[in-house]
Image 1 (tube, one colour):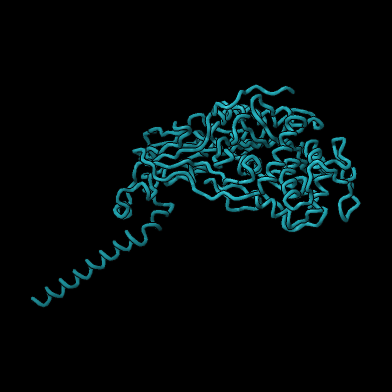
Image 2 (cartoon, one colour):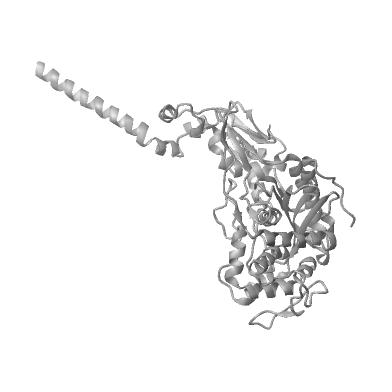
Length: 496
């Protein structure tokens, strides 16, 4: 009898050990798989059981949480949703997250390990801590100026502090209210279908997620390549370029919209935007040197994060001489996001040094204790300081005497470059209007801001569309807001 009891006890002990081993396997090794299983509602219930952390602009929250009283208790709310949608993105109980809400989801949802006092205990219990906050680099006055400046136009603005790379404004129009996607009712799914089916694509962040042909705004890069390679050694010397210019290896004759381009100097060609001069320079510099120059400004970088991923801006690696010539004037397959073109202007303004752009100044826990400051990424030289100084001179000439006059600001030095990019089959689409620029108070050494503006469709006849008349006024308002904030200069437009 005792032997049977002992055998039974051993079997029960083995079964207990097996049960404990299986429980440990489920809890420790397979927990992630169970958590990720779509049939498991516990993760969603836990995620929305507490308020989500805040996204901050100038120290003030532009996001919040609302107690819905449902099983998925807390829904996201947005202050000035359309204004900040290109920054925050959305956080939806049905459709997930986007942009900053996705990139910093761990901090905002309270799941990031940096929020834990005792990380090992949190990993064991899988507890949710209160969500932390994400401080952005956005300047509210500049963001408002960009958004209002675009108005009903379809387009985007990106503004950067040249010395640091801090993104000061990121606007995209038309926009949408992310709060319409926060809950889980039929109104949310209806809004999702309506927004995704809308022809103007309001959910597309045009500032960082759409790459456009940059047109003549790209001539800043071509001019830098020409000066760095010493294809041009004197910006005031004649370039010996005919008008029209026959593209290499073809019978295609390239002409100019402006007069005075025949044999124009680099400085004059830059001011009046001569396609012939820059196309011939591109062909002369060659594919390899042009591509290297573009890449120093950030083109062809597929790893750029701010922390949201940025669509790559491209300069093709394989082209014949005629295609290089077209690419040198921002056409053919050359594309750029507004953020990329703001980086180009920022590098010029900053003496040739390109500081990587970033959107997050820091993250903190629920008590306000900073967990991590903004990214510490190394700046790089896009060009030498002497070349940058020459480009600054040429960009100032565009604003003072050329097509960029509508960007002038009293009390400040402003440099800019206009662009009108053709697109569509046989270039039949309404051209994109570009303007890239930077501004510096005349009594200061450091520039305040670099800006890029693109407008897809403008309320003007095709012949009247240009960066100078459509995009430059928007850039002026954003630069003026930056200068007002710095207390460095007045804001009135210069004489036109």
